[in-house]
Amino acid sequence: MYVYIYDNFLRQKNFLSLIHSMEVVLTDYGIAGKILRLQNYTDSKAVIDDEIKRGAKTIVIVGNDSTFGQILSRSANCNCTFGFLPVGPNNTIAEVLGIPVGMEACTVLSRRRKEFLDVGWMNNRYFVSQLRVMPSKLEVVYDERFKVTATEKMEVIVCNLQPFFWKKDKKDKEQRVVHPQDGKLEAFIRPLTKSGWWGYKYEEPSIFPFEEMIITGKEPFAVEADGKMSKEIKVKIKLAHSKVEMIVGRDRKF
Amino acid sequence: MIFQRNAPKIVEESNEPEVSERTHQHVQDEVETVVGPSVNVEGDFASEGNIVVKGTVSGSVFTSKHLTVEMGAKIIANVRAGSATIAGEVKGNMKVKESLELVSTSRVVGDIDVKNLKVESGALLYGKITMPGIESGEKSIKTKLFKKTEETGVQFVS
Image (tube, rainbow over all chains, first blue to last red):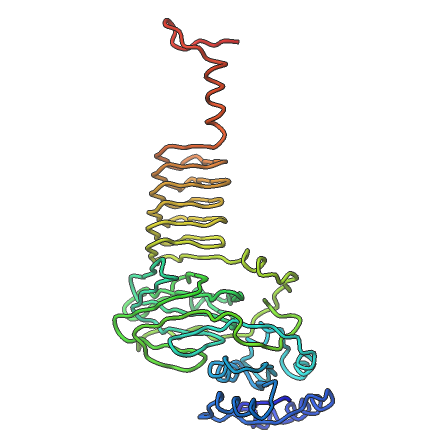
């Protein structure tokens, strides 16, 4: 049995026709199911656990990167298969998973090509797309073997499924992309150096693939994991291997 | 924090060529570790893939693949690598399995153990170079080709 979890933004008028035609296609394929709508304060884990008890085997996330992150960060350890129907803008994870945005995603879902995905673990919760530590004075220890520091503040971005986009500076027109690889988490460290009186300039990023990392700061620093902000003084990031069973497309990037 | 510049916006990426092989080993081959400028790394720095050093590394460096030390980069460590290209500064012993290239801007202080060595003019090197294959040959050269005499020191014997 399929259960579809729609993001709240899909109520907007410009998505209604697309959603309607997707529902028609899903009915044609014989994989239509119960529809739930995600609210800001919905605990996705409780909802999914409830549905699994009622017999749901496949949970399909309908929305964008933030919907994907919001649901899987809570329910990565649920005993079910996950599907994804990317709709609207901000869908970078869908491309990594080989799922086209819009109507064609229904075909990928119906084919049920399943793969186990690795998920990141941060202190006491999962993250699937990206974790970002805002610029501050940090010390990063990788796999308990080596330590990375910078003279000034630095920003740390840990990518699991979401690719990392960066530019050398404001004038740099070329958008650089680094695709994360499965089997390891990838950390991008961008130190900030003083530029002029007021400004700070991003340095070229350092890239470290890793399985375990500890970030410590002298002062509390802001961490954003799958769009959720928190303040921490010490963050332990690990990779949980093959945690989520996911329906993926043929053109996936791993 | 007030004056900090905004992070670059996420834009839809361009189409990447499709990866035909999806084996785990294939993915591992592409892993690259980059130590950026103004970043200091301390400890046992090891990587399964290629390493590019643009900053400072102290402790030890190990990779089974290629190590690139760019101009301005500094390594104060013992280095073990599959192959290496040095354009920066290295203080420590180097053990390279295949080929080592010292670019004109490189400065190396330490012993080198390598199979193939290429040194560009202008490169600075202080240390002992050992190449495998010469130890066994050295004895035969000494016994067959050279004979020490009391008058001349070394005499060639055909």
